[in-house]
Length: 393
Image 1 (tube, rainbow, N blue to C red):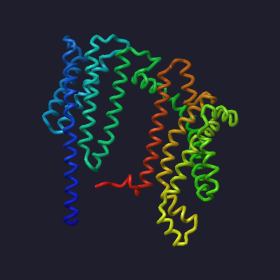
Image 2: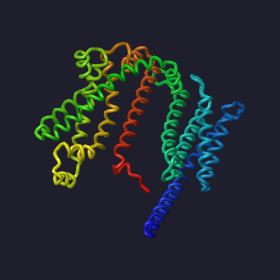
Image 3: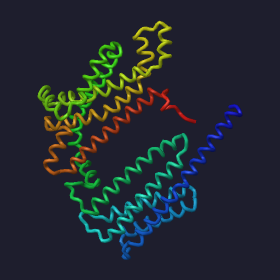
Image 4: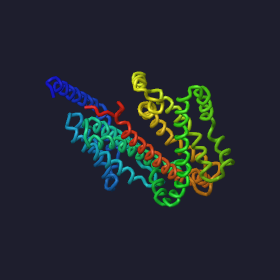
């Protein structure tokens, strides 16, 4: 490495250190708000603190106040993470354990102040993790995973506490604990429903995405079709799914082929549009170079245009990964065997088993997230050369 390159790298590291330090300085207002909320909740607690929940709440609130003081005194980020994380977890666990279902809340002001303190503590914890995230290495991956996990856990905590504290009827909104219990107790039923829906999702996803890609190549090869097929595809994509699903059930029966047909209609146009834009993304200079090599259309397509279109194609695949599941579930509302996630949601709503409805939604959300993540992982491996995936030093 030359002297100029070393100086430039040192300058970049210095700038990043200054940016990290400036981010840490912005925490003072948030730390003050968190500390004041924790102090207020501590002062509003009942004096009969012999109960276990009160002791845990008091310990957690004290740690939050200590973390706020440490942040205001510019302590090390590791110490701040320890205090803030411990206080947030202790206070959240104490609040949930002290709120029995359908129990009356004796100190609502203290509860609200403690909830605000936990929320601000989680916010500070996320900010501290972001500021302490290294530029590369396994620790960076761990920090990137920790941020959404902490955010999601905070939202679940607020959901649980609000539902319990204000005695929200389960018919309107069950707490996450009730949904998790129903999910664990209904795994065989949810598994059968998932497999039934998965057949329609998989078949429709493959056929719809594949047909969209093939038609995009056909349009690229025959420009005359671009003016006819693209508006027709736009028309098909604008058709309401609640109108298409009953027709497909009448055409293909009550089993999974009708759901696959709905998924094909929903996934065809996004892939067509993305693949068509991707095939046109190849640069003019590269296209002229292929012509100078006397390359035919097939060689130009496989060597230049399809590789250049891969980011667009994967974008269409990721969009279709969620549309396919939505289409199959909605289609099951209009006719299916006595299994399927759409059938389960429709049936349990009629029985007022809303926790089972949320458990089915949880299965769909987990599958959709995993499916999307797998496609994103394959995209990263296949398009590592794309600027958005290049490693930055």
